[in-house]
Structure formats: C-alpha cells, structure tokens
Image (cartoon, rainbow, N blue to C red; front, side, top):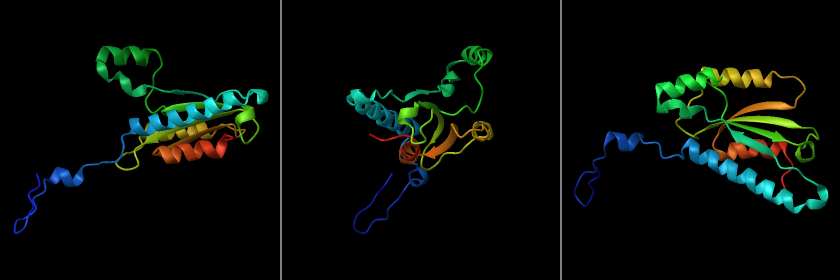
Length: 156
C-alpha cells in the first residue's frame, strides 16, 4: 500500500520492496522458441541451399506437480531431476563449426533464480562429452540464451 502526497509519509509494504518484476522463466523461454522458429522460417526461404531446420524441444520436467501418482508414473518412465530445459539439434549446414551440434540450455530468470545441484551435474556431464559437438549452457534470460545460439549457428 502506498500513501503519498504533500505533507504525508509514503508507506510501502515490505513485499512491494522485494517483489521480483523480472520476466518469468516461462516468458524468457517462449522468447527463445519464437526466435529459433523465426530462424527456421527464414531458412525455408533459402530453398536452393537446402537448409534443414534446427530441431528443438522443451523438456517438461516441471509439470509433474499435478499429483503424486503422475510424479511416480513419470519417474518410472525415466524422468530425472535436473535435466536441462531445452535441447537443440543443429544440422551441419546451419552450424558455424560445420558439423552437427547438440545444444542443451537451462533457462533462468535474469534475477531471483538459482541452479540446483542436479542441474549443475547434468551441465557438467553434457559438457564432458568429447568431440566439441555437444554443449550445455545455463542462461539467465532470453538474451543470453539467444546469444549462445547465435555463437553456434549461422544466423540468417
């Protein structure tokens, strides 16, 4: 609650001062999806170059919270804590390195987010794969995620 005016004190609730107004992880991730979809649409325009799309998918690991039964079912099917949020398969003709790439991205809010031990373990395990064709990145916000992708793929 704010009360302000000539001769009055401004009163601010404590939670107003600590509220995080940065975009949610969902909003940041949607922006990355929109960017890569736009890149794939542009690639279709270059028919003579036969450019394949960058394949991608979100890993919907956080949606098990609906019920304990659903959680147990997903765990039985192989769901594990910490798996990163998105995976991208970049065909060689779209990769700056000239070879197929697999890119994993864990999206975080720019402010007010943390990375779990399990996520760090996944990131390290993915980055330990030899050959330089697989990489994992923890990105704080859409700009950082898109910059990672721009560093790896040929932007059209």
